[in-house]
Image (cartoon, rainbow, N blue to C red):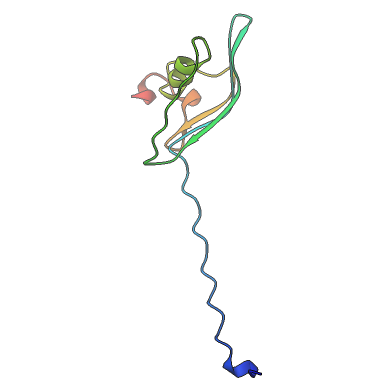
Length: 96
């Protein structure tokens, strides 16, 4: 039987690096056009260097989602953050 001194030392615990902030983040985004709800609590997160494809049927909110990300539309509720900046708080000049 091995004595405690013959057991190898446990590896030192390495700190887990914090996940970087996503480049694009939509949190609980809701958008209505009149009485039609196009986006209902949309959550989306895209990391730096990550590619994302948005697919779906006609009228499912693909273009509306992309227009929120580039600042052409502002959500009725929820938040759109690109590079750490909340898009809905920017004016036309801040979006360029």
